[in-house]
View 1: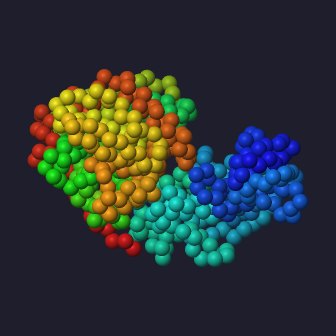
View 2 (view 1 turned 90 degrees about the horizontal axis):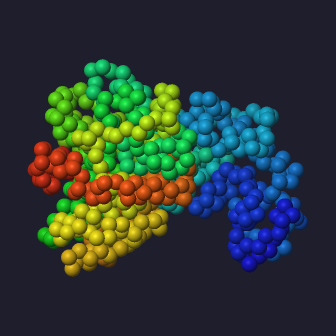
Amino acid sequence: MVTLTINGKQVTVLEGTSIMNAAKQVHINIPHLCYLEGLEPEYHCRVCGVEIEGEPRLAPSCVRQVSEGMKVQTNSARVRRARRMIVELLLADHYTDCPTCERNQTCELLKLAFELGVKEIRFEGEKPHYELDETSPAIIRDPNKCVLCGRCVRVCHDVQTVSVIGFVNRGLETMVSTFMENGLGNVECTNCGQCIHVCPVGAIKEKSAVDEVWAALADLEKHVVVQEAPVMRASLGEELGLPAGTLVAGKMHAALRRLGFDTVFETNFSADLTIMEEASELVKRVKEGGVLPQITSCCPGWITFMEHFYPDLIPNVSTCKSPQQMFGALSKTYYAEKAGIDPARIVSVSIMPCTAKKFETQRPEMADSGFQDVDYVLTTRELARMIKEAGIDFASLPDEPAEELMGLYSGAATIFGITGGVMEAALRTAYKLVTGKELEKIDIEPVRGLDGIKTATLNVDGLEVEVAVAHGLGNARKVLDEVRAGKSPYHFIEIMACPGGCAGGGGQPIGFDMALRGIRGQTLYAEDRQLPYRRSHDNPSIKKVYEDYLKEPLGEKSHHLLHTKYTKREVV
């Protein structure tokens, strides 16, 4: 243990603690810009500088470790002047289009300038003039707004292990870019969007479909249907002024109707459908000696990662489409038939916590309905903007249900939105398919929580089924390397690209906060416990779609509409 003094207060902390973290223990927050909890600090910005007695220079508190007897001032006149100067210099080079910027309500640079008392910008810098990177179908990079904090580089390299962006050039020409400046759409980017979460300004954002959806809603010739991902009910409220983790499923349905959507359904319905197909596929592989372990396919970010870096594992991946794409295919076949609507008139919109879903809809194989299965994807942030633009008082809306045909869902579907949820939902149904009995302990605790890799063993009629759950592509890589080496003991593996699963998807409210992602997950588990159906195979709407249309899991029509194939992608 080490004892030091911070702003006159004595504090004792573990040796090796940074000054910044030591200050938190005496309730002092040191301003910072490039630092992000959970990522290795690299002190690019120097905003977190502090004064240490006996030292001539300010020290970056994010990396400087404490020492016995150290005396630190975090708020001296010298420190305040230096911080304001740094922020002024950043603003001198920064485009000040704040009213129209994507991040004008969540910009950390703007917030920092206000908190540090910056009242004027005394310098005139040379504004950069780089072209926007719009090569990706999901993400736009604006290098002109970049403050070179390096957060996006670190999350891409250290957390996701994809490493498609980095610093290029030197001196005043330094910028963040892709290999040979090819653009995100031409490198191994998985479109996960974690770079958006960690960017403090508006240099990275999703490619918006808001204008296209407004146009479709205004077109009287179109019939616009909408689906909402499971985790939306636990995160949308944050963007609209409600406390984190507020369950807003009913208000969300009501808001979508008031926006003008003709039919409001639920992705939870097709999450249950995914379980019926995926659990059946797992049971078939186990019984018939198919390729194991079977790996889930719900996450398009993980699928793209696999196609780039692990194409040899394609036989291990479930052939099931994601719930989004299953819904899209059925909206233009099953629903069109039931409602008597020409599928050419149907516009299928999905509300997702995920930027990679925008890429997924454009995959050429996602058109088994005879049309593009899903036409537009809106993120959580985009839907919130539409609700605000329409002047809807979201908090005061009554709770309304989704349409029953493709809107009823089970608790198993709801927990899709948090890491481990797909695994738990699949095991609830796989157990029934194998044994003919219901799983007695329906809450499978070992696959819950935010540990990067979780494992469990489930006894299924005498067979010890080994399962693993990984979230974040860096953790996925560890599990996949075992599979590739032939050392994996698992029968079934769930992988989600984003830390926390969909609760931390690239389209969620801005912030790289794992505790907040956990709160959203707890909301989903709470809804699961209170729903009348907790297993996908108990959902009456799922029984009906098989009776009336699909006939059976893994059947001919199911295979055509609900399953797909994957592509080996060349690594640049």
